[in-house]
Image 1 (tube, rainbow, N blue to C red):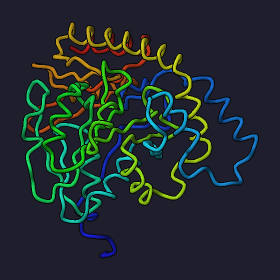
Image 2: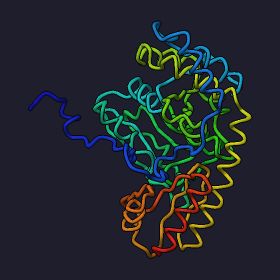
Image 3: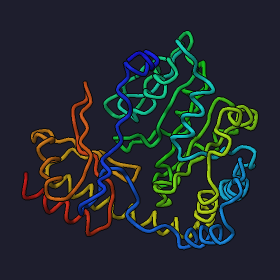
Length: 348
Protein backbone atom coordinates (compact mmCIF):
# COMPACT_ATOMS: atom_id res chain seq x y z
CA UNK A 1 0.00 0.00 0.00
CA UNK A 2 1.60 3.24 -1.15
CA UNK A 3 -1.26 5.67 -0.79
CA UNK A 4 0.07 7.74 2.09
CA UNK A 5 2.72 10.43 2.26
CA UNK A 6 6.02 9.00 3.56
CA UNK A 7 5.96 11.22 6.67
CA UNK A 8 2.53 9.84 7.63
CA UNK A 9 3.71 6.24 7.29
CA UNK A 10 6.81 6.96 9.39
CA UNK A 11 5.10 8.77 12.25
CA UNK A 12 3.55 7.02 15.23
CA UNK A 13 0.75 9.52 15.78
CA UNK A 14 -0.40 11.16 19.00
CA UNK A 15 -1.90 8.80 21.59
CA UNK A 16 -4.33 10.53 23.98
CA UNK A 17 -4.99 9.39 27.52
CA UNK A 18 -7.33 6.49 28.09
CA UNK A 19 -11.03 7.31 27.69
CA UNK A 20 -12.86 4.13 28.73
CA UNK A 21 -16.35 3.92 27.29
CA UNK A 22 -17.51 1.20 29.64
CA UNK A 23 -17.03 0.21 33.25
CA UNK A 24 -16.73 2.43 36.28
CA UNK A 25 -13.49 4.32 36.87
CA UNK A 26 -12.17 7.21 38.89
CA UNK A 27 -10.62 9.21 36.04
CA UNK A 28 -7.52 11.10 37.12
CA UNK A 29 -5.56 10.67 33.89
CA UNK A 30 -6.52 13.41 31.41
CA UNK A 31 -6.74 16.57 33.54
CA UNK A 32 -10.49 16.94 33.18
CA UNK A 33 -12.39 19.09 35.65
CA UNK A 34 -14.24 16.80 38.09
CA UNK A 35 -17.14 19.23 38.60
CA UNK A 36 -20.11 20.14 36.36
CA UNK A 37 -19.75 23.24 34.19
CA UNK A 38 -21.57 26.47 34.96
CA UNK A 39 -25.38 25.97 34.81
CA UNK A 40 -25.40 28.84 32.33
CA UNK A 41 -23.78 26.55 29.73
CA UNK A 42 -26.70 24.12 29.66
CA UNK A 43 -29.16 26.97 29.44
CA UNK A 44 -27.31 28.60 26.54
CA UNK A 45 -27.03 25.34 24.60
CA UNK A 46 -30.71 24.65 25.22
CA UNK A 47 -31.63 28.01 23.72
CA UNK A 48 -29.69 27.17 20.55
CA UNK A 49 -31.41 23.79 20.28
CA UNK A 50 -34.80 25.48 20.58
CA UNK A 51 -33.94 27.76 17.65
CA UNK A 52 -32.69 24.78 15.66
CA UNK A 53 -29.46 23.81 13.92
CA UNK A 54 -30.47 24.24 10.29
CA UNK A 55 -28.18 27.23 9.70
CA UNK A 56 -24.41 27.38 9.73
CA UNK A 57 -22.79 28.95 12.80
CA UNK A 58 -20.95 32.26 12.84
CA UNK A 59 -17.64 31.30 11.17
CA UNK A 60 -15.64 33.53 13.54
CA UNK A 61 -17.60 32.93 16.75
CA UNK A 62 -18.33 36.62 17.19
CA UNK A 63 -20.41 36.27 20.36
CA UNK A 64 -17.58 34.48 22.13
CA UNK A 65 -14.92 36.88 20.84
CA UNK A 66 -16.86 39.87 22.13
CA UNK A 67 -17.50 38.45 25.62
CA UNK A 68 -14.04 36.91 25.96
CA UNK A 69 -12.53 40.21 24.88
CA UNK A 70 -14.39 41.99 27.67
CA UNK A 71 -13.36 39.40 30.26
CA UNK A 72 -9.71 39.27 29.18
CA UNK A 73 -9.26 42.93 28.33
CA UNK A 74 -8.43 42.50 24.65
CA UNK A 75 -10.12 43.58 21.43
CA UNK A 76 -12.26 40.84 19.80
CA UNK A 77 -10.13 41.12 16.66
CA UNK A 78 -7.24 39.71 18.70
CA UNK A 79 -9.11 36.41 19.27
CA UNK A 80 -9.41 33.32 17.05
CA UNK A 81 -11.81 30.52 18.04
CA UNK A 82 -11.01 26.85 17.58
CA UNK A 83 -12.41 23.36 17.99
CA UNK A 84 -10.46 22.89 21.20
CA UNK A 85 -7.00 24.37 21.66
CA UNK A 86 -5.57 21.44 19.65
CA UNK A 87 -7.33 22.97 16.63
CA UNK A 88 -5.62 26.27 17.41
CA UNK A 89 -2.23 24.56 17.59
CA UNK A 90 -2.93 22.88 14.26
CA UNK A 91 -3.97 26.13 12.55
CA UNK A 92 -0.88 27.96 13.75
CA UNK A 93 1.45 25.14 12.71
CA UNK A 94 -0.16 24.82 9.27
CA UNK A 95 0.12 28.56 8.73
CA UNK A 96 3.73 29.02 9.84
CA UNK A 97 5.66 25.77 9.34
CA UNK A 98 6.30 24.21 5.95
CA UNK A 99 7.95 21.10 4.61
CA UNK A 100 11.60 20.65 5.66
CA UNK A 101 11.33 23.55 8.12
CA UNK A 102 11.64 23.40 11.90
CA UNK A 103 9.62 23.97 15.04
CA UNK A 104 10.94 23.96 18.60
CA UNK A 105 9.49 22.71 21.86
CA UNK A 106 10.75 22.07 25.38
CA UNK A 107 11.27 18.54 26.67
CA UNK A 108 9.47 16.94 28.32
CA UNK A 109 6.21 18.62 27.34
CA UNK A 110 3.08 18.11 25.23
CA UNK A 111 4.02 15.58 22.56
CA UNK A 112 1.29 16.73 20.15
CA UNK A 113 3.53 19.64 19.11
CA UNK A 114 5.99 17.23 17.57
CA UNK A 115 3.19 15.36 15.81
CA UNK A 116 1.90 18.57 14.24
CA UNK A 117 5.33 19.22 12.80
CA UNK A 118 5.49 15.73 11.35
CA UNK A 119 2.14 16.25 9.64
CA UNK A 120 3.66 19.24 7.86
CA UNK A 121 6.71 17.29 6.75
CA UNK A 122 8.71 19.45 9.16
CA UNK A 123 11.13 18.54 11.94
CA UNK A 124 10.84 19.25 15.65
CA UNK A 125 13.76 20.24 17.85
CA UNK A 126 13.39 19.44 21.54
CA UNK A 127 15.25 21.59 24.07
CA UNK A 128 15.50 19.96 27.48
CA UNK A 129 14.29 21.74 30.57
CA UNK A 130 16.87 22.28 33.28
CA UNK A 131 16.45 20.09 36.36
CA UNK A 132 14.64 22.93 38.13
CA UNK A 133 12.23 23.11 35.15
CA UNK A 134 13.64 26.40 33.91
CA UNK A 135 14.68 26.95 30.28
CA UNK A 136 18.20 27.89 29.26
CA UNK A 137 19.21 30.25 26.48
CA UNK A 138 19.35 27.22 24.18
CA UNK A 139 15.61 27.55 23.75
CA UNK A 140 16.07 30.93 22.07
CA UNK A 141 19.13 30.02 19.99
CA UNK A 142 18.99 30.95 16.28
CA UNK A 143 18.46 28.17 13.77
CA UNK A 144 18.01 28.21 10.01
CA UNK A 145 14.41 27.59 8.96
CA UNK A 146 13.07 27.72 12.52
CA UNK A 147 9.49 28.94 12.02
CA UNK A 148 7.65 28.36 15.30
CA UNK A 149 8.33 27.63 18.97
CA UNK A 150 5.82 26.10 21.40
CA UNK A 151 5.98 26.70 25.14
CA UNK A 152 3.34 25.14 27.42
CA UNK A 153 3.02 27.34 30.50
CA UNK A 154 2.16 25.76 32.92
CA UNK A 155 3.95 22.77 31.48
CA UNK A 156 2.71 19.21 31.29
CA UNK A 157 3.63 16.81 32.79
CA UNK A 158 5.45 18.87 35.43
CA UNK A 159 2.84 21.53 36.23
CA UNK A 160 5.67 24.07 36.48
CA UNK A 161 5.58 27.61 35.13
CA UNK A 162 7.93 30.28 33.80
CA UNK A 163 7.47 33.92 34.70
CA UNK A 164 6.22 36.30 31.98
CA UNK A 165 9.43 38.34 32.08
CA UNK A 166 11.47 35.24 31.26
CA UNK A 167 9.16 34.31 28.42
CA UNK A 168 9.44 37.82 26.96
CA UNK A 169 13.23 37.53 27.11
CA UNK A 170 13.15 34.24 25.23
CA UNK A 171 10.68 35.56 22.66
CA UNK A 172 12.82 38.59 21.91
CA UNK A 173 15.79 36.31 21.13
CA UNK A 174 13.88 33.76 19.09
CA UNK A 175 13.97 34.17 15.30
CA UNK A 176 10.33 33.05 15.02
CA UNK A 177 6.92 33.43 16.70
CA UNK A 178 6.38 31.84 20.12
CA UNK A 179 3.07 30.21 21.00
CA UNK A 180 2.55 30.11 24.77
CA UNK A 181 0.11 27.27 25.41
CA UNK A 182 -1.88 28.29 28.50
CA UNK A 183 -4.21 25.31 28.74
CA UNK A 184 -3.79 25.35 32.54
CA UNK A 185 -3.23 29.06 33.15
CA UNK A 186 -6.46 29.57 35.10
CA UNK A 187 -4.97 27.43 37.88
CA UNK A 188 -1.69 29.36 37.97
CA UNK A 189 -0.48 32.45 39.82
CA UNK A 190 0.11 34.43 36.62
CA UNK A 191 -0.27 34.27 32.84
CA UNK A 192 1.19 35.81 29.68
CA UNK A 193 -1.80 37.55 28.11
CA UNK A 194 -0.27 40.99 28.67
CA UNK A 195 2.78 39.98 26.62
CA UNK A 196 0.74 39.70 23.42
CA UNK A 197 0.39 43.48 23.18
CA UNK A 198 4.10 43.93 23.90
CA UNK A 199 5.39 41.60 21.19
CA UNK A 200 3.95 40.60 17.83
CA UNK A 201 5.91 37.35 18.13
CA UNK A 202 4.04 36.17 21.25
CA UNK A 203 0.71 34.32 20.91
CA UNK A 204 -1.31 32.73 23.73
CA UNK A 205 -3.63 29.75 23.34
CA UNK A 206 -6.32 28.81 25.85
CA UNK A 207 -8.86 26.02 26.24
CA UNK A 208 -12.19 25.72 28.01
CA UNK A 209 -11.63 21.99 28.58
CA UNK A 210 -9.88 22.27 31.93
CA UNK A 211 -10.86 25.25 34.05
CA UNK A 212 -14.37 25.59 32.59
CA UNK A 213 -15.18 21.84 32.69
CA UNK A 214 -15.98 21.67 28.97
CA UNK A 215 -13.61 18.99 27.65
CA UNK A 216 -16.52 17.32 25.86
CA UNK A 217 -17.62 20.51 24.13
CA UNK A 218 -14.30 21.16 22.33
CA UNK A 219 -13.59 24.87 22.40
CA UNK A 220 -10.32 26.78 22.53
CA UNK A 221 -9.03 30.13 21.37
CA UNK A 222 -5.93 32.07 20.44
CA UNK A 223 -4.98 35.59 21.48
CA UNK A 224 -2.58 37.28 19.06
CA UNK A 225 -2.15 40.60 17.35
CA UNK A 226 -4.83 41.18 14.69
CA UNK A 227 -2.48 41.12 11.71
CA UNK A 228 -1.65 37.53 12.69
CA UNK A 229 -5.26 36.57 13.38
CA UNK A 230 -6.25 37.67 9.88
CA UNK A 231 -3.75 35.25 8.35
CA UNK A 232 -4.74 32.36 10.62
CA UNK A 233 -8.38 32.82 9.57
CA UNK A 234 -7.31 31.86 6.04
CA UNK A 235 -6.08 28.49 7.31
CA UNK A 236 -8.88 27.38 9.63
CA UNK A 237 -11.81 25.25 8.49
CA UNK A 238 -14.75 27.36 7.28
CA UNK A 239 -16.95 26.54 10.28
CA UNK A 240 -14.47 25.10 12.73
CA UNK A 241 -16.61 25.83 15.81
CA UNK A 242 -20.27 24.79 15.89
CA UNK A 243 -23.22 26.78 17.19
CA UNK A 244 -23.59 24.72 20.38
CA UNK A 245 -19.93 25.18 21.25
CA UNK A 246 -20.03 28.94 20.63
CA UNK A 247 -23.08 29.34 22.85
CA UNK A 248 -21.74 27.11 25.61
CA UNK A 249 -18.29 28.68 25.59
CA UNK A 250 -19.72 32.20 25.65
CA UNK A 251 -21.90 31.36 28.65
CA UNK A 252 -18.99 29.68 30.40
CA UNK A 253 -16.52 32.54 30.08
CA UNK A 254 -19.27 34.96 31.10
CA UNK A 255 -19.69 33.19 34.45
CA UNK A 256 -16.51 34.33 36.18
CA UNK A 257 -18.04 33.76 39.62
CA UNK A 258 -18.33 30.04 38.80
CA UNK A 259 -14.72 30.00 37.58
CA UNK A 260 -13.43 31.64 40.76
CA UNK A 261 -15.26 29.18 43.01
CA UNK A 262 -14.19 26.17 40.96
CA UNK A 263 -10.58 27.34 40.83
CA UNK A 264 -10.49 27.77 44.61
CA UNK A 265 -11.75 24.21 45.14
CA UNK A 266 -9.30 22.72 42.63
CA UNK A 267 -6.34 24.52 44.23
CA UNK A 268 -7.37 23.40 47.71
CA UNK A 269 -7.62 19.77 46.60
CA UNK A 270 -4.37 20.07 44.64
CA UNK A 271 -2.61 20.98 47.86
CA UNK A 272 -4.09 17.95 49.64
CA UNK A 273 -3.06 15.66 46.77
CA UNK A 274 0.53 16.97 46.64
CA UNK A 275 0.92 16.70 50.41
CA UNK A 276 -0.50 13.17 50.44
CA UNK A 277 1.83 12.02 47.66
CA UNK A 278 4.89 13.45 49.43
CA UNK A 279 3.93 11.62 52.61
CA UNK A 280 4.02 8.42 50.55
CA UNK A 281 7.60 9.16 49.50
CA UNK A 282 6.99 10.68 46.06
CA UNK A 283 9.16 13.57 44.89
CA UNK A 284 6.06 15.52 43.91
CA UNK A 285 6.72 18.68 41.91
CA UNK A 286 5.08 21.94 43.00
CA UNK A 287 2.24 22.41 40.52
CA UNK A 288 0.56 25.45 38.97
CA UNK A 289 -1.94 23.30 37.04
CA UNK A 290 -4.85 20.98 37.83
CA UNK A 291 -2.59 17.94 38.15
CA UNK A 292 0.58 16.96 39.98
CA UNK A 293 3.68 15.17 38.66
CA UNK A 294 4.97 12.41 40.90
CA UNK A 295 8.34 10.73 40.41
CA UNK A 296 9.51 8.34 43.12
CA UNK A 297 13.18 7.88 44.04
CA UNK A 298 12.84 4.17 44.86
CA UNK A 299 9.53 2.56 43.86
CA UNK A 300 8.91 1.28 40.28
CA UNK A 301 5.93 3.25 39.00
CA UNK A 302 4.53 1.27 36.08
CA UNK A 303 3.35 -1.53 38.42
CA UNK A 304 1.65 1.09 40.60
CA UNK A 305 -0.12 2.54 37.56
CA UNK A 306 -1.27 -0.94 36.53
CA UNK A 307 -2.48 -1.81 40.04
CA UNK A 308 -4.41 1.46 40.27
CA UNK A 309 -6.06 0.74 36.94
CA UNK A 310 -6.93 -2.80 37.99
CA UNK A 311 -8.69 -1.27 40.99
CA UNK A 312 -10.66 1.24 38.92
CA UNK A 313 -8.44 4.32 39.25
CA UNK A 314 -6.90 5.77 36.09
CA UNK A 315 -3.79 7.95 36.31
CA UNK A 316 -1.23 8.73 33.60
CA UNK A 317 2.08 6.87 33.60
CA UNK A 318 4.78 8.64 31.59
CA UNK A 319 8.42 7.74 31.00
CA UNK A 320 10.77 10.31 29.46
CA UNK A 321 14.21 9.42 28.20
CA UNK A 322 16.79 11.29 30.24
CA UNK A 323 14.24 12.27 32.86
CA UNK A 324 12.79 9.04 34.13
CA UNK A 325 9.19 8.22 34.80
CA UNK A 326 6.36 9.49 36.95
CA UNK A 327 2.66 9.38 37.64
CA UNK A 328 0.69 12.41 36.50
CA UNK A 329 -2.45 12.59 38.61
CA UNK A 330 -5.29 14.97 37.80
CA UNK A 331 -6.96 16.87 40.63
CA UNK A 332 -10.32 15.19 41.15
CA UNK A 333 -12.86 15.67 43.89
CA UNK A 334 -11.73 15.28 47.49
CA UNK A 335 -13.38 11.85 47.63
CA UNK A 336 -11.60 10.73 44.45
CA UNK A 337 -8.24 11.91 45.71
CA UNK A 338 -8.80 10.23 49.07
CA UNK A 339 -9.59 6.95 47.28
CA UNK A 340 -6.42 7.23 45.20
CA UNK A 341 -4.18 8.05 48.14
CA UNK A 342 -5.69 5.31 50.30
CA UNK A 343 -5.10 2.70 47.62
CA UNK A 344 -1.54 3.90 46.94
CA UNK A 345 -0.78 3.65 50.65
CA UNK A 346 -1.56 -0.06 50.56
CA UNK A 347 0.78 -0.56 47.58
CA UNK A 348 3.92 1.21 48.77
